[in-house]
Amino acid sequence: MKITEVRAAGLRGQTPLGGWQEELRRDDVVHTLIAVHTDEGLIGIGSVFTTEKLVHAALDLLEPVLIGENPLEPERLSERLHRCTFWMGRGGSVTHTISGIDTALWDLLGKATEQPVGRLLGGRYRDRVRPYASLLMDEPNRLAEHLSALKGVGWTSFKIGWGPFGRVSTKLDENIIQAAREAIGSGARLMVDAGGSDSNWRNDLKWALRTARMLDAYDVSWFEEPLSPDAMADYVDLRRASPIHIAGGEVFTRRQSFYPWIEQGAFDIVQPDVTKVGGLSEQRRIGWMAQDRGIRLIPHGWNTAVGLAADLQLASALADTDFVEYIAGSDYVDNICAQPWVLDSDGMLEIPSGPGLGIELDPEALGRYTDAGALLAR
Image 1 (cartoon, one colour):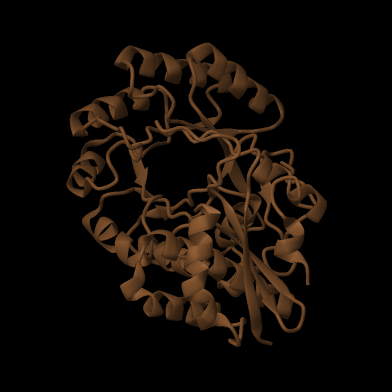
Image 2 (cartoon, rainbow, N blue to C red; image 1 turned 180 degrees about the vertical axis):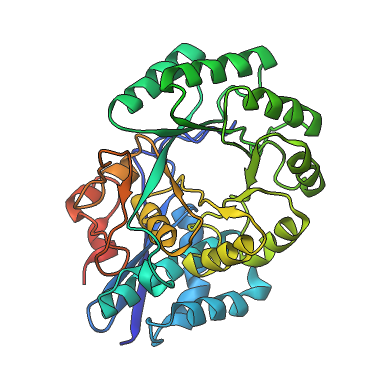
């Protein structure tokens, strides 16, 4: 089997709000799907957290390295792409694009061998995993209504983030958390994401420590991105002093970026995004490295159904990855697969056991957001 072509298509029309100060619009493209085509008709699918213009530019560099290669060797090919582009933009959009290619290659390997990717990654520790509904914060009453509605349809874990939190007043911050806890009840899991990678984030270590103590009073499971993503020394100090777990890492690319943070003890929970970090190959290596140091990997998942499928496969293959992020109410997660995602009676998601990522894109549904024929047509 040989690679014949790599295609990309951006998703537009229902882009969800992102929480950034420079806000997204519905037709902005921040998620791009990748399709790796082969001479035997098999197609692998991946997802990239980058606008399609940058993905197409990156493919001008990457595709010539891939054409004619055996697609059933994802780690070798992805590492070759990293090395071949070292002088042309290591990290950033080039690595983001490699992420989508790598995931597509794992999908192809699974389809060719008729195995789920999780088994190929080392074995299936679990066949289902708990998702947490991830949504942006709002003023307390509206947020409580949204959370109550999600709880009513079976969600048992929730992460709220960004919005006004840490940006208006400490009183409003606590009112938001109190309303959220009351809406979901004492038995549900609650996580809080400050959104420290916001371009206008201004809070510091002292704010983060005071806030962590407040969150502990409401039984918050982890505090995510409470600081600027470059403030490693402050993260180390915060993790040592915080009464609750500290999480981060969603903006980093490649395993090498995670090494110093993990070695210095900056995180209790590390959160690489499969659509940015270099794909499943890099994500798995980060998971192994973290596990050896008593740190859990819980993937960042504010992306697409393809990214979610990859995270589910990884969750089956890593012993300590017992949560996945599920962006609540996104058409790009809920409405592009032939089979919709369904919570079971325990609020869990089944990890697909079919070949590859275990999902099938619905061309007609996908066509509402991109040129599905140009992406998938054989």
